[in-house]
Image 1 (cartoon, rainbow, N blue to C red):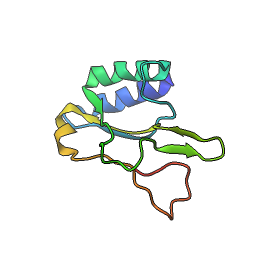
Image 2 (tube, rainbow, N blue to C red):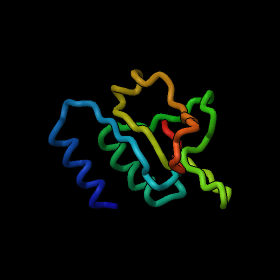
Image 3 (tube, one colour):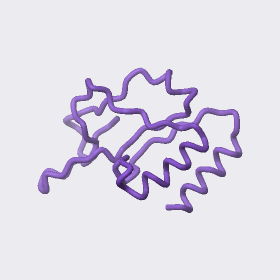
Image 4 (tube, one colour):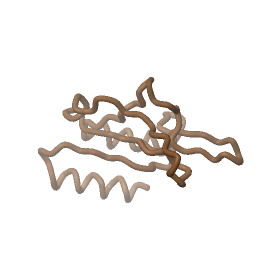
Length: 106
């Protein structure tokens, strides 16, 4: 995972002056209880990147669900540079009947 964070840092450094948008399946919950998130937070602090929280109007509080195990978590995230945060009006999960994935869209 450190290799991935280093690669992200290099890309950001090569494109200084641009806003950053990181989105996708991070495969861990954004919580200080996880080593992965604490390490990612160091990268975020260095480049002034913030996770965009789910809106209270979001139909679900999770982005991943395993119905059989009744496991639900928010592991898909949308993160942006401080300067872009005001451009994000609302972040919600999207429940679509034709989505066959175990992840919802953000």
